[in-house]
Image (cartoon, rainbow over all chains, first blue to last red):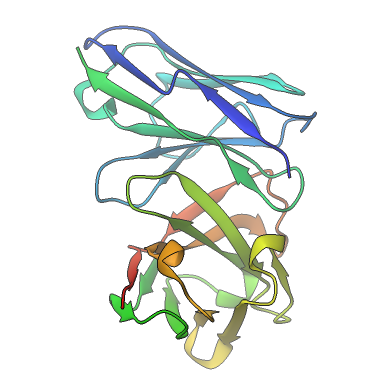
Length: 107
Length: 124
């Protein structure tokens, strides 16, 4: 299975901060990388697909980049509603695998 | 509005089977693969399988092979996930989710619609 390693596992940030989350794959996954946001008690929500494509309805402060094995999710200006857990997921090959998540908390 | 609505919470004894349903509405059920993802309490997300609603074809994660079965009933736009021989390690929220790729689990476009989740508790 392809292992997905996210860092950091958690971070504290303030409203208005720029936040970057990194995801590393154990082998090349081309651009088959998706990002999800999950709030407590809720189902995940698709933010970014194919590494850098913004899902419809998602604010433009979210962006994704990378290729091969290194990927990043950036929130340009953190808003109160962005405090949540974020997961990367590879869909290059089955079984699809997720990172362990990054919890973004209020500083 | 596209929706996936799952069946209610289940409590099972070790060794039993559990079957969760996922009813789709607001789109043509046959046109988009359905995936199942689970999340143990306080843990991350784990992909289990997908089903092609059009053909009934499935792909399972190896660790669930032989214990999980995905089926569908196109007449009522519903997908099912059955897990057999459950243990306490199977205690989790089970989600169904729609693949955004039209008639293909391309993976490149992600899972765009999710059910509300079904809590399955395994306890003696």
